[in-house]
Image (cartoon, rainbow, N blue to C red; front, side, top):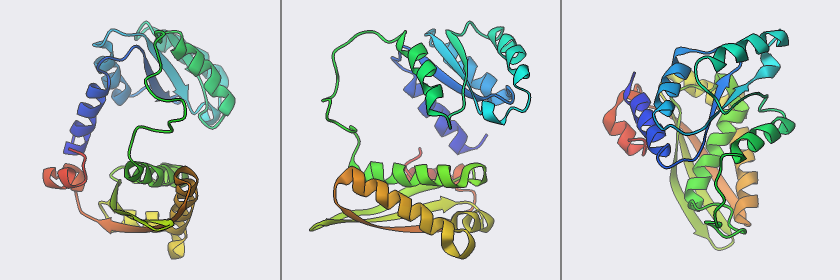
Length: 227
């Protein structure tokens, strides 16, 4: 595993500290070694674990799901095993119900009107990252990072500059798309969402740059805020 993998694993383990319940999402088309590795880490926390089998819409033989669920139940005493398709809003209800059963009652930690506790700059990067994932889907290169280079308020408008980092020229071509259409769409959809979030006009510039093997480069990971 490269440095990026190790950094992500550290982040995951840190995120598990103090949790009351864990929601683990796997591909319903099969259990793999990565799933087993994640389960091994989560089991150390000894908290309720809800397992969601995602992408059931891509499973051709739905009757195969029952034996799979039975097999998974032998790997761990899951609090619940729920087949879902993340594309379906109605499938969210049983997941929320299963998770909420293990959440303790407590006073609100944030004001009901708060949208997020993260900075606007952070949300800009996350919005671009979301558009990358939604629009490219399985074509999205694994080693892709989003960095907000500039975030400036100018009177009635916010100016944002974002760089999307990949490792190879071929990956850059995928993100940019034919005649730049994909990159333009990513920027446009991100701008629309950010204008709604920030409540003002937004101008966003997106760039795609190549840095070979950045996912295994300690200095590059620190520069990108990933280590």
